[in-house]
Length: 275
Image (cartoon, rainbow, N blue to C red; front, side):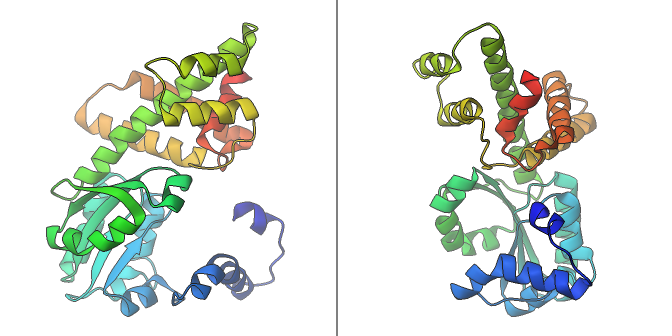
């Protein structure tokens, strides 16, 4: 949405709200969804509210902000947080929801834009077990598997561990492809050989193809991958667990963001590795 807003002139906040409503909500309303103007409106209209926004700060703003979720939470309301956040943020939200008598579940997702469209995500949940059970029909529509991991925070921690693996692996792939190009090797040959080895997996092969094609269509925004690496490093600081590879990878993603590739796919980290 950022590029669309940058190219559009607005005279007041109401024009911005109207643009966002029309741009983001039209298809959902056509499909039968009801549109609310604020997070509190959505909670008021639903027994169970699912939220998936950009980052921990956005997740907090949804709950604690003006006309936020917390305004309408009551003992007959439940809240499912699907944003990729750290355990501390999730615990803060859970405490606030539970404090008003509501039920809370964190449900982190593993998967790309394509997997979301296909309904094949992997869902990592923690928190209220009864709410997890009640959400199974929704989780089955979104993903192929859902896991209950116990107390609030465990799902966030698991998600960050997996994102750490993905982020470091992708950075290594980008550097390897850059080295191959500099050495005069054909990158398509590298990928063809790689496909025959034990390193072959859908994620690496898909990102390798994106690097070769150079288009970087967004499956997971690079800025979100960098955010998850940053949160992983925060968790490691608390636990005094060294993560030297993650720290180095995080710097590479940060540089790629400064080059303007934050909203491109995470595979655009290749641009930083190459140049």
